[in-house]
Length: 439
Image (cartoon, rainbow, N blue to C red; front, side):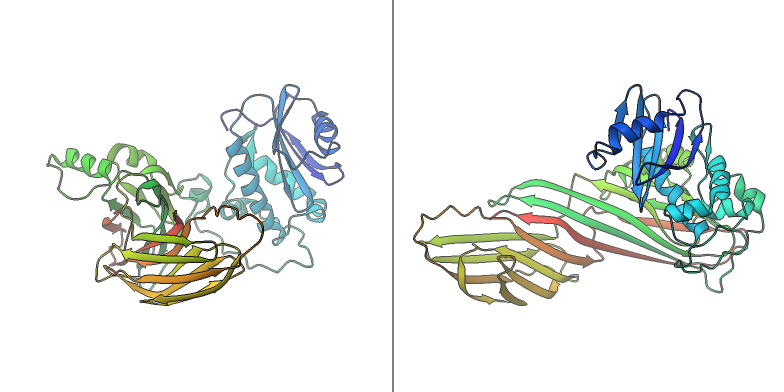
């Protein structure tokens, strides 16, 4: 946090202080009374998790039957404070056998005080990794009789290296018979298109998921076809930029294992990976999105009792690819009495609970245009007919080996001092986020 926390309190639902820790002397010890009087007794706990009383700010979160309250005397990073609370609770659960409630706190006073001294220093958050803290705080918490007994990890051989934070997310001494790396680029397409076919809103949110089964302490380097990275590589090698599609990544966030210093200087993603599965990075794309589907709806209201619906869905991706689990939800009026329809691919039915025609296509090849034609009979009412608002058509789909952003992996290199060979697997998946077309 840019400004340190002054105190942290653990309260039960009645407002009694279970445990507290004062980190700075800029607030009084009775600040919890202000929280109890102005927030808990007025029953305004659910309105906003951030409140200012006097000259102090209170950030609070309820976990089970416990309120965790952080008090700061100046402006502070709220997101950082809540992230600290979430990770601290995960740490306590790892010691308490998965339980965190009032009983767990009462049974582990000494251990909690010891942990609070380690995870926050003078109000500044420190290392909250359970794997690292368990190396030198070896005391086991009192477990609830209802919590499952969790197996403890083997101690890390080089504890000093881990505690210093050099590579706190990976143990030394890992060994695999077959060294493999699995990389998945998973994207969600968000679209809002007008009835005339113009794009009103479109973006792609993506994440790179990795699963590493590598021996030793490997160093990985990932190259993508992002514009900044390619330009920086060309400058370093004194070569012209290669022609081809480049993309601009927005709002990029990395896993803690990524070497940010190297990324800022070379624009390459270099990291020592954690063992097993983790999320390497997240990103967003707002320009140059390749839409996987085009939806062309035509809805005609024939008087007060009939409607005609024609929907054409065109797959824009390559003919050798296909989409799986495609679902098109076409809204109809609530007074629908009878429907009849024809489809050139898949199956369709009327779902009265959601007032939609649900058209499902299990396997949707690329460069095809299946259509749905439906006739709808409506219930005639004596009351004056209200205009139908026409909710948008919604789509669900999953397209393997396709990225709406155009993001591609140029290379994935693995270095390890023993020089073993690795097998790299790369997969692309595009899914529907909020994919809507007005009709």
